[in-house]
Length: 427
Image 1 (cartoon, rainbow, N blue to C red):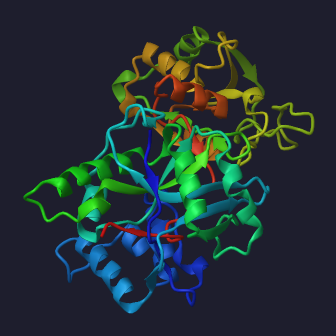
Image 2: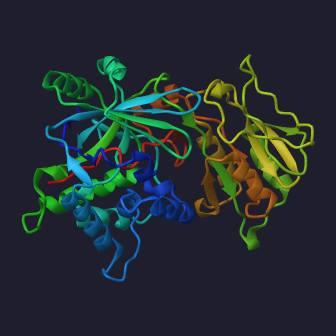
Image 3: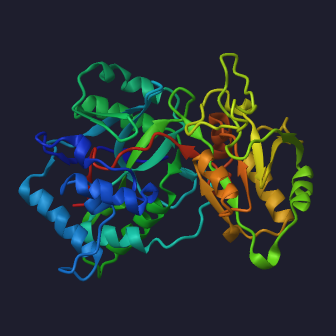
């Protein structure tokens, strides 16, 4: 079973305004967004989370390490006096909170205790590894899902207390942190956390990188940092409908110039796996995915003749949501022919349809914003798009218990924990 323990976190000094110094996880920050966060404050977490080049250093990781050491030396970030767990709650404007515990999770090869929930796309992990080597700190947490029932009830009473730290991000999400140093409470939470497997929800690559670094640090010939490298900071949430908001990740497909596929052939390929029903469409926009008060979803043009899709689709009634195939000038609803088999995620079926078209994985890109997906088709950046439905919590749990992985980019957990609420040193 997984091992979870408290740690002495590093947090910004209370004199800092947290709104100015938190930032999103590194892998969802665009270059333009990075500049915005960097300009907010010289103490913004972005300067370490996603460091810039600086002529005074041989690489940007040395720059990050210098900034990190300066923050510690100057008291910009301070060690909590006792080893602690951290209750972390995120509340967007719709009031649907996600609450979990930040602690240190023991690193081990995925197996019985640690369960990846989806396949990963191969990418260079050197970036995060170099950051670990230079800073010797977990700057942002991975996100895990605990299969332990009732975990949330162990810290629910604490949420009535005044939080230790509060911040509001640029999306209006309220981030609150409570420090738990009571030994009895900490021990009980860690005991329950260790009673069931933990599913990696977000941060597969960071987990793999931390595991690789732990191996380096354990080498007798290395300048390792001791036991601290054998753990990784993790935000763990109970896997339940009450705690999770899971959004879809949409598929954008770009055909190579030599492999152009007629739209009729694309439609035929999807007909093998879906009923393909034409929808009315204007010159721009996308299909609607917001349920009405009865939980149904109406996909009709607005007064301008365009179809619209909200930037943040509702998480409610998501299995009743629609999948949509967006082609140039045509929009189709996709209804799975095997729709009684809800434990097979939509992304698996879409992958089969794309495989039937001989479309390589490299020709598929992803976005959590449906408007952006449709705009990519209308501007020619993509040849077609598939607007996906959200994966359900029951599907995630079923895959986890059977130790199966979903296809890459099947889930988008939202909101995202902010870097800067708490840091963890490895020594």
